[in-house]
Length: 367
Image (cartoon, rainbow, N blue to C red; front, top):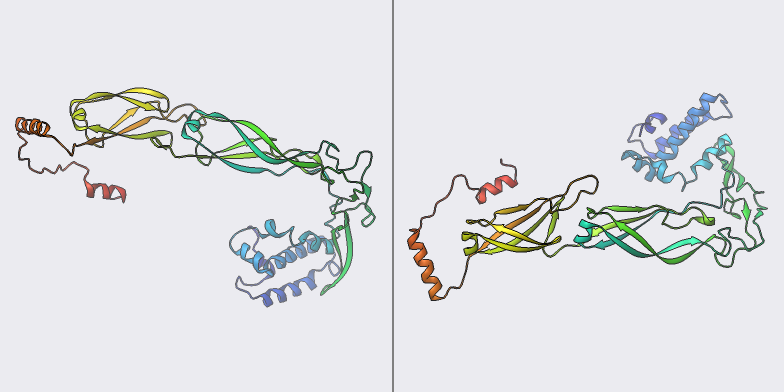
């Protein structure tokens, strides 16, 4: 907030409600338009009145103390424009139009990872408001028109005199008879009951662009509900949630998957057929592949949602050691161990290996 309302009233930030009230009364008597009609004094009185309106209300004061703008949230609900209009004759808004834009809406849908990567055509069914075909959005019975409200004479608001500690004031409020429209529909449309719109269930088709992720929102301009009086349609926002895939998981624009490889294939090298989201690919496993090795497939990840480029696919290898060997298999492995002089190996810790404690230091920022 750019205005310090405590400073405006001349009180401390921890001032009590009674101190705030006392400070305002003193300033109001000095600055009231009936006492000082000078324009600059009136502006000062407006500022003081706003400060009191905020600081005298516990909820508004709490919002202000937290750095928010309490008037954005509370001005309409508390009729603050009417309060100021009582002193300055302002606040007169006149009749409000019967035609208004509809309200934007948000729906959430779940899609699979493949649709998120490549895009897809989707169709959703929504309950929404459309213009009434019977009255063409006018809200009136055919051949009739709204009539001027007799309570407010078409102004959309009424005025009453009330007493306050500052004397008698004129309060302006929305007309309760016509709800501020200035006119009354005496013969409403039987289909929409004077709203100019009816609710219906409809199917909407739209495209999901390639590269979306969970939390992405697609704006369907003019596909939301029609406003009161058959007013312009609002926008519909579709929020995307991408379901988990059993094989692939996404990190940014890259895809990752894990495969298990027999010990012999890792040692000798081999070629595998891998079923990816783009179809089958040949994956070459080099001889001597170790557990935790990673193979990179360039350009087989997720396309960038805005701009050029495609991420990569990372295949993480896990070498599987056999747990059950028959006699012949065990004998062959023993012979291999003899040939490699590995019958009684010694534990060797590599100083350059990224061991358990090294990984811990990496995680917690040790290096």
